[in-house]
Image (cartoon, rainbow, N blue to C red):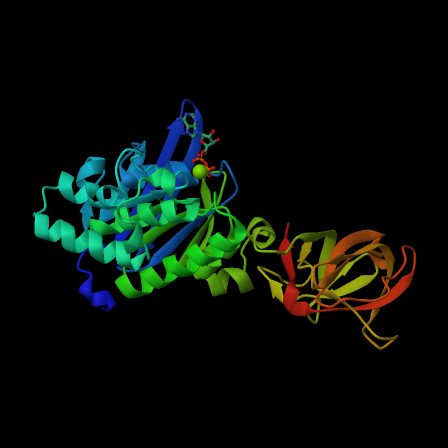
Length: 360
Ligand code: ADP
Ligand code: MG
C-alpha cells in the first residue's frame, strides 16, 4: 500500500488560534499549516499549552479566537465526533470490559459500518500493530505497550482525516518507547496519514516529524523542519531545548566568526542575527569543547572542576578562566582513563558547529 491509497488524509491550517482561561492566555495567536500526509510535532515543556492546542484541534475545547481550516473548510463549529479524527492519549483510554477486537471495532460500530467493513478493518489494523493473536483478550491482560498499540489500531481503524497524539509514549519504558517510535514512523510511512503529535521530548519530535512547532508559554517560538531547527534554532529557548545546554553570558561578536567573552574568543557556528558588535549570549552543546592532546594554536586553557563516567562517555565540568571563570558541562564520547583530577589543567578546542550566538 502506498500513501495515495489513503484517501482520508487532510490538510490542516490553524489561523490566529487563541485560548484564555479567565484572564490567563494559555495559547496565543497560533498560526501553522500542515500539508496532506505530513507529520507535525507540537514540542514544548510541561505547561506550554500543547494539550490545550491539541484539544482545540480535536474539538474538545473551544478557542477564543481564530480559525481551524481542514481541507479548505473552517471546522471551528464542527463537533468533535463529526471531525473524523483519530486520537491516542498517554493513558490508553481503552474500554476495560471489551475485548481488544471490540475496542478496535468501537468507532466503526458507532458509525454503523457494515459487518464486513468492520471485520476487514479490525483485522487489518490489528495485524498492522502486531496484535492479531491477542484479539480475544481484555485490556488488563495486556502489557502497557500492547495496550498502547490497541489504542493506535482503534484510532487508525476509522481511517481518520487526521491522527492526534498526546504524549502517547510517556508511560512506556525506554525500550518499548523506542519500539513504538519505530512503529509509529513506519505506520505513518505506509499509511500516509496526517498527524499532530504532542511531546515534551525533542528526540521523539526529531525522529517522527516532517515539521516541528516549538511552544513556549503558549506561543510558537519556531516552526520548521527538524534539520532546520537542529542547525538553526532561532531563539535561546529553542536552542536550549535542542541540546545547547551551556550558556556563556556577556558575549560580543567581534568579527571572523568569533564571539568574545572576557578575553576568550569562541568560534561561533550559528549566529541567529549577528552583526559584528552585537552583544548577547553564547549557547554551547556538551560536545562544543573537545579536550586537545597538547598545546596547539587555537587551543584554550580550562580547569577541571569535576569529571565522571557517563555510560561509554566522559563528562566534565570545565572552568574557563579567560571567560571570567564561567563553567560549562562537556561530554566526550570516549572513556578517558584515568579521570583528570579536580583542579588539573587541560587544553581544549571548540567545535564551532556546536556553538550558537544569540543577540540579547
Ligand atoms: P501542556 O500540555 O503543554 O503541559 P496544557 O495545555 O495542559 O500544557 O496547559 C497549559 C496551561 O493552561 C497550563 O498553565 C495549565 O495550567 C492551563 N490550563 C489548562 N487547562 C486549563 C483549564 N481547564 N482551566 C484553567 N487553566 C488551564
Ligand atoms: Mg499536556
